[in-house]
Length: 574
Image 1 (cartoon, rainbow, N blue to C red):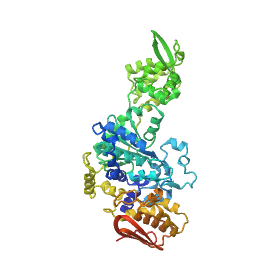
Image 2: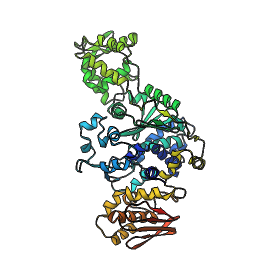
Image 3: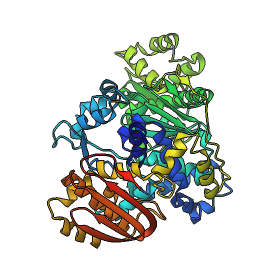
Image 4: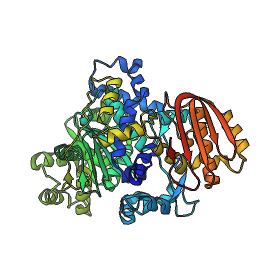
């Protein structure tokens, strides 16, 4: 491999957010690695999914949501995979992308898209203020095996992963378990978040462990408002799909042009809603400071009675019923009679009259004429009617800041995997695509398939981007460290001939002898770059030769000799 290709392929092993940003095909490679994993295919055999085999994809997806909520924790410990520096990352990627472009698109390098994070001071928010300002986290993305291994890590009761890991997990599981076609799943990456749009019913967004339907997007609750933050405030940097990707900075795009156009239209429809009294009630639930300008009217034995809107929303907090939906009358029945008055409250707009106005005028707040029409109706009461109408218009429509559509769309080489294919058929198919599809080839590196992959990318990643194991080693002498790794559990988190990286072994305190040998080699290399190192795997035996000789037992069955010469030259392979 030349240096550029080696950088990309080693990035498929470590999968940091920066690596995915620079090499966007890596995002889908992780999804494919998870699809190849036996872990997710085993979920299909669980009773909770087997009993839904005849049900709709939507029902299966809702069950998957609950499964992921129960089994996985959202992990925002940015030190899990160690720390690096801005200067080191900029230097590493300067031949691929300019520092200025990185700063415009990455939150830890100066990006200011999400006002919320910068209002609270992003470094303090993520716990980085205790370090020099040049220090940033690796922010690595985990395979499903690494996510599951968090159960072995102190302080975790369940599996875990950060947002990109969860998005990749959801995409793979939606395909394998829910049998949703890959062409209906679109991955959306922003500088601070990753989620998927699933083209099912009116559209569904994955958001960390949860799912957000279109109805939920517009329900005005606090949890829905948080789910909106990325698409409302951030630029979309990458859209990934089985036909390819589009990147905010790169002129060439590999995603199918028509698929990208259709996705943009469907996402826009998902993010837009017509004005109705029910949706307006959701707006008041979200922007509660406007509730004081509205009142609800009900009929009581032929006589009108009036209620402050904020009082009704207060009742909603402890109720199973909601304002302005099909349970509205039941909610009104829960309100104390003492809260109603027999006269119209001054300085408040009647919601029933507002509903009549909406029904007759049907103002479209996406254009100036519709906003003006509504403004005239409310301005006799509202002190800042223009601001109110603009906020309502923003609530009804979010315009995602997508990568431009004027890209150079390259001929598509889609990955045509059917939900009817078995795991073995999919792996065979992807093997056949390795020569023509970069994402398919890189998937085997993310999968850590050491039987069929060049070892150089794995070795490069192991020796350059695994700071946790080095930090855990501290100043202990190598003989003590040899004892330390020998005392760890001997089970790899990856089945077969797949290998964990040193920091995965160190974090989860378990690993095959070959993986432990790489961990010790990483520590030797960081302590003394001038040391010549040789690692020899001979089936069930592994020998690491550095300042001394260290022996390990292995169940991986791999045979390889890796020479890591002095200084920081690339390792030779024999």
